[in-house]
Amino acid sequence: MKITDIKTFLMMAGSPASKESTSWSARNWCFVKVYTDEGITGLGEGSGWPRVVETAINDLKPIVIGEDPMNIERIWQKMLVSTMGAGMTGTPGSGSMNAIDMALWDIKGKALNTPVWNLLGGKVRDRIRAYGHASTPERALELKERGLTAVKTGGVHRTVEKVDGIRKAVGDEMDIMVDAHGPPWFTTKDAIIIGKALEPYKLLFYEDPVPPDNIEALQRVQDNVDIPIAAGERHSHIWGVRQLIEREIVDVVQPDTGRIGGISQMMKIAAMAEAHYITVAPHSGSLGPVAEYAAIHVLAAIPNALILERVHDDVPVRYEVTLPHIETINGHIEVPNRPGLGVDIDEDVVLAHPSKGNTSRPGSEGDGDYESGTFDEHVYVQSRYRRQKTMGTSVNSD
Image 1 (cartoon, rainbow, N blue to C red):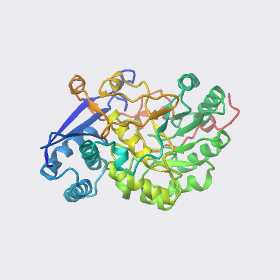
Image 2: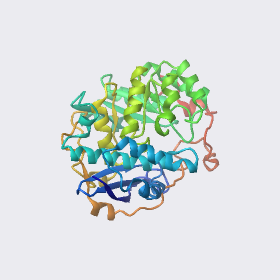
Image 3: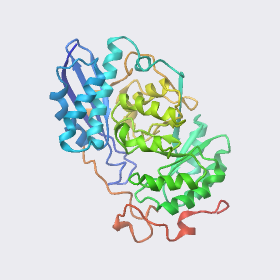
Image 4: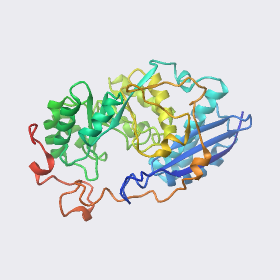
């Protein structure tokens, strides 16, 4: 079997409920199909700046066409070597390799008439636990009533008060996670202060409390906060998360299923993490549903799977573009048994949502992310200098 062509499918997936120019309104999804001379087609997805990823995929086409799609590792290494002239492979390069790698696993499963999880060693579990997102107690209760057993809230504004309200609403039987990523991010000391204030709430994990660029800062948070620390969504390949795992800076590693480098890299990262008793909770906050399918296959096959991030009710097109759509039932997703990834896209739906800009301003003025009067500064890290009002560090605060 030989690869004969690669086509990309770029679509707008911004939420109409999001304010113009925010990250959610500017979201794009980039799918790819890899075609073979035996009529088998593989489907994949790449993120990490999807409009740039699409260009990178087209650059990789001459490297991949003519190869045997069954030789997945050979093709992955060939793609990596081909990009070295551009410097270290960042998330757009990794995202393009990710999309093609995912499609190759899909082809292999279809060719052998078996699900991808079976190619990865077989199933450890039949269902994958999933969580949703809530910024208010009302939304958390709604998700609980729909059967979810875990919810994530976030941001750097009144974080503790937000968690306190959600905990009081849902009770102790529902897991809560906090995603503190920015911009702006906490300073290291502020991340520690907030983390210690969150300890009484018994969080499942505390995610990205400081920017990803300085792992020494994350190490300080790990050393001073008694909550499992999660990170890794912004990194590329096994080398991007190596120190987080080897130095045990994280308790939960979160490779992004769309930009880490593919299913091949996900499995290697999971094995590295297993050796350090670190669990895996893939990031998928900005991804489309094809990457979600890939994450399900990986989590089904690894022993150290923790939970899967799912975005519920963000855009109607999420429920229209894939066939079939993933369903969360009683807080879990059933592992598919169809050959390959077990999913296809409706190309007409993609065409009906043409891509637009993929960059955005962080948040909007008055949303509480930045200190009052500083929104136009657009700083990467900002100290919470009006602490009691903006940080909400009191467990008993109203």
